[in-house]
Amino acid sequence: MIEFTPTIRRSKRKTAVIRIYPDNNVVVTAPSRMSIQTIEQFVDTKTPWIQKQLSKNARIQAQKNTYLQENTILYLGNLIALHTLSVGKSAHGLEKWYRTCAQDIFEDRLSIYHPSIQKPLQKLSIRKMKSRWGSCSHTGDITLNLALIKAPIDVIDYVVVHELCHLIHHNHSPDFWQLVSSIFPTYKIQKKWLKDNGFLLIF
Picture (cartoon, rainbow, N blue to C red):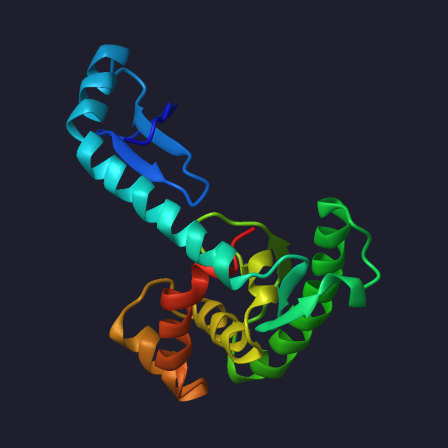
């Protein structure tokens, strides 16, 4: 059994919900008035499911460690030896390099596909996200997951198009997917790639 200590967050939700992140952080979001005892009881009832998810994360990490050889990194879907890059040995130096590359490449891909959307894009933000590849606000701001810089360029393009289409359809309705398909016809291939290989990208 994998030991875990859940993080409890309060919200205006009417019911409690549990989320498990790739780093095995177990987060319980509960109504502000729910007692600690009730939350603990809720977690107890969900322990078999939590253990299943934690074990799955462990298997994924093992696969990731097997795929990513020592002193190599993923960049645009390719394994690159660290000694070929001038990024320093620290994790901070590597992340800074990833961010610089991501800013240039994401902006370039947005400039290619944005003309297909008759809606203004206000701002691009890049940040590490635990459970999403991108997001689009109602004000026209798009956020892309920094981890996407590790994915093949066609996968980045799919996420870019996906979020651009949210400028028009703020949902995943048939109209939304039809718009995605009209701009990026092969999107199902890239979507499946993310589902099957996304665990390799997460920092």
